[in-house]
Length: 349
Image 1 (cartoon, rainbow, N blue to C red):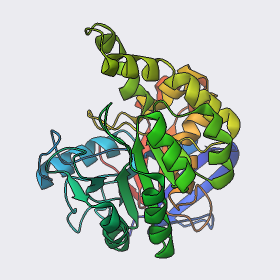
Image 2 (spheres, one colour):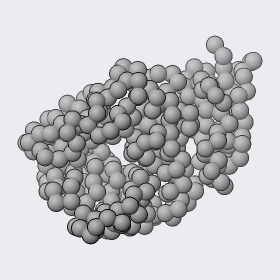
Image 3 (cartoon, rainbow, N blue to C red):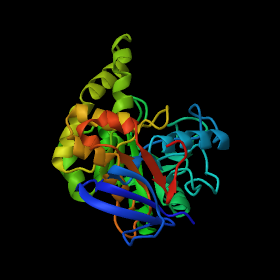
């Protein structure tokens, strides 16, 4: 077995490290004839905390070949872990376990009330049945994704229903991610104590301190929300247009305020192309987060939130290496000098 070695300064603290990948674990005990594959500035891998690989359009079934291709794009970009809060179907056994593809946690198909979300993707149910449906998913994958609100004039999921889902899922050790892009849905999600608010557009900034206290994370998917802002501005006036333009225009300010309030912010891309979480990290900085905190949202902070430690002895052997400190120039994220996943040097580096 080839033992890989990396050395340099490890983020987030910048401490010098000299690590050896023995199988899928780091050790600092020297291993004779280990292969030094890279040295420089080290992070424990990028994380895309909101990605939906394996389907080309809403409502399409999960496609194994496309799923592999999407995950290869993530890995090539230095993403060693993903969270998929919603998949087009239950994934194959190799998902999250293939040695050359990112680790993964997922929520399975989306759960929604009747009349909401995309046909073919959501599991829709009566309010009374949603907790049991969510528990069944949590027992399979650990995460559940619930649609709290959808179209502009839809009724959001009532807070008592969402709270019942959260309590039931937490009782079996699961976690709940909630889609929200309207103020009422976001308020219900925070009041229900969900584990993460996905998107969070139009979220009341007055709720941020409560989110920080109770540990509710925010995955703002900032880049994809603001990317369509100019196109939306060019459309004819309507309540839907006003909702989107207003919410998307203020979304960056919300993200900066969330970070300032101590909310765990996670970097997630939401839409193709896959392997572009670096763009989201840079968008977080443009919104007002510090480069250190934004990179943490797409690396060590997200990794910790999802249950994996960083670059220390005994931790899973993932690392992305850069020649210089990537916080000084985040364009460097596009050009890692080495990517190690599960103790294996990924090809192409």
